[in-house]
Amino acid sequence: MNKNPATFLLLGEAVVDLISTGIVNTLDDAAHFEKFAGGEVANLSANLSGLGFQVQLGSCLGEDSFGKFHQRSMQHAGIDLSLIQTTSQAPTTLIPVARQTGTPDFIVYRGADCQLSLTDELQQAALEADAIHTSAFALSRDPCRSTISAILQSVKDDQKIISIDPNYHPAVRPDLPDFLEFLKLIIRYATVVKPSLDDCRRIFGSGLRPVEYLEHSLELGPKIVVLTMGNEGSLLGTNTGERYHIKPRKVPVFDVTGAGDAYWSGMLAGLVSGLKIPEAACLGQTIAEHKIGVVGPIQDYLPLADYLQESRAIHYEIL
Image 1 (cartoon, helix red, strand yellow):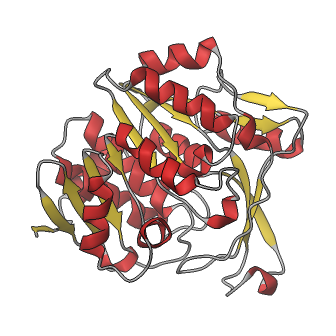
Image 2 (cartoon, helix red, strand yellow):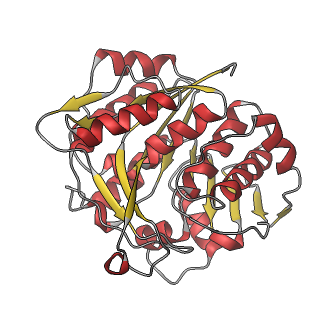
Image 3 (tube, rainbow, N blue to C red):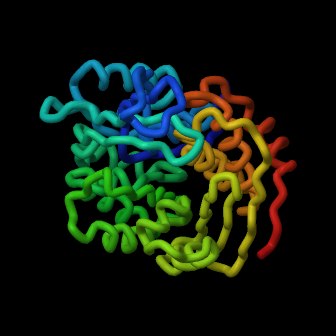
């Protein structure tokens, strides 16, 4: 595959997901699991590479069999692993997940993902990348948080795309008592954030309408907010006043794990390719719909042009 000239640097969690082989309500009901290389940041790396982009992954793994498995998986996905760090001080982070058609039950066993340290190589890669992505999960613990914060601060005026997934959940066990306030502050560096309704309820409190969550997210300072709502599609807002509802299509649902990462891949691919913002969101919706039709990560990617053609069938309306 000929690589797209646009380059991405993804900073944060590389974990091993243990996903139940059957659809169950809770992990207590799960009897068997299959392992996958995962983590929002690592998943998005694989998705972007599968779409033909040049991707560097800055993550930390344990010096163990799960860490080696993850590296083999990412290498097979065509990701540049020259920035991967390893540690003997913690095991590779593990996340057992109950396969579900809705929000899945999961447990996070934090380990090496927190140990990403600042290096000259990471800083140089940040300067050279066209886009940088990270997540609330990655920012939830030091030293990884300090590493990524320093990089975002150093490139905030470079006119590159900075994306932050505000995928906060108490299960990540942040080491800051006021982590949500920190997260709200660092989002001001972002070009684009993509919270889910669950993320918004945890960050802003429950009981608000989706459009209110969208407005609260925009008030934090990003240029673009995409609020994903599962089978209700997504809301899109910009700091210049644009508001859209991206409509979903009815597609079979087999596994929602990683659907958000798939949406991210289409959205970012569209933005770096010069699509209009709602067109980029439609591309994200299209790839997310492909993802929920398979168990585990997408293995066989269509050419980006095919997804783009299909995305033109996605309807959106001005709010």
